[in-house]
Image (cartoon, rainbow over all chains, first blue to last red; front, top):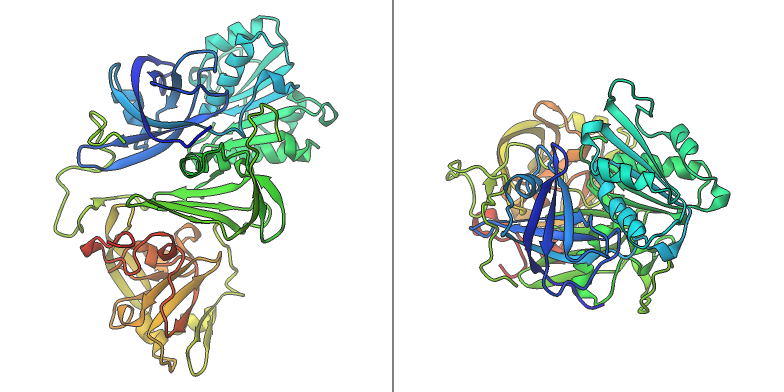
Length: 245
Length: 92
Length: 203
């Protein structure tokens, strides 16, 4: 294992995902590898020495080389606008990681698996789904993904492809603000009733990962516990008090 | 809204200090005796440092700050840590 | 690591050209009001709230919320400086001066420790809080002080870094020997003068 220290990664690719979110692929010399669900801490330093630090979940699975981050720009953010709007291929980025063995899923952990994502909380769960696909796992998996609108759904096409592959993966969306004409899916905030319709029974002892803005995570976790799920099987990653999903 | 996060948020700085993956380390609260993985604790974190609290009783378990090349680590609220050094993919 | 490394094109959210003589060294101007907390926001009912002065005093003194409201009040407009480098100018508060509160007890102590709901503490020499230097405030911007900013009542000691302006303050413990508080015992400077950049222990 060993102690972490700050390293320099280099941006090798950048790609827009939605109007607000972009993915950045980094080459990190001596990267020890990571697990799906882990994150890195990113540190920006201005010329006068001013520093700002934030955590970002790794979007790429362990099977892919390097580290891909997907960042959603917060309107009043200090770090995210730089990463989404300014960072270019060839730039260096200071990071520390991988961090977190607690909020991690590997196919060997089994399931059934329930993933609950609010907005950019989808990022670490996408790493889990990408890992799942890379190893050909058929662990029964359901994803409940809450977004403001269809345009805000990150990885929309990739999730559609994964969902079609007949590997026991079901993707369920809920849109909380704007739904497209003809939308037959959920169009409200995640609540106990929705979770009950989507999740497995407590007796099936699903492994549950919830990620997104803090209020979203707390509501979802409390609902799942109220539905009878064992808190020990529920793992949460709060992103902070930012926005709705 | 408070700046409350999960234990993962403090994993980075703790793993600068300890040569282990720290979010799966089990910590026993001195206040109420509950044992949780650090990843499951409540972390209040901002520019001054991180304060890690018991999700059951809010007692401060760990405080950590870094300044001038020094870590300041207070673990008075921890009765004991269990650090599993084996590399295992299974949940504890 | 990465000595001299800087992120191309990064400036953070600080504005250019607003530096003024009112900003202590290393600070930037903040127009919002960041909330930094070390724990959950306490919610103490005013009916059970009190403020007390204890410790090395002849007689401990206690004020209920109603009693506190009858004390002579002041409005103050001050600049505040957080050790995390943001400063906010002309913040507007109302409350009771520590001169008034301490004037009502007999003591021989030299220091005080402010103690708060949620367990936070900070220490100050009494000479740093007397003579119009400190207040216990319940009003910000002409409104009741919101809980996330320390309401119902917080300490205000604007000439020092803002971690000394303890939120959710419930009283002062007067002592003969100084005792480092919550951040002072975790590497932060015992005094905290922003004009001397006393951020950390040893500065």
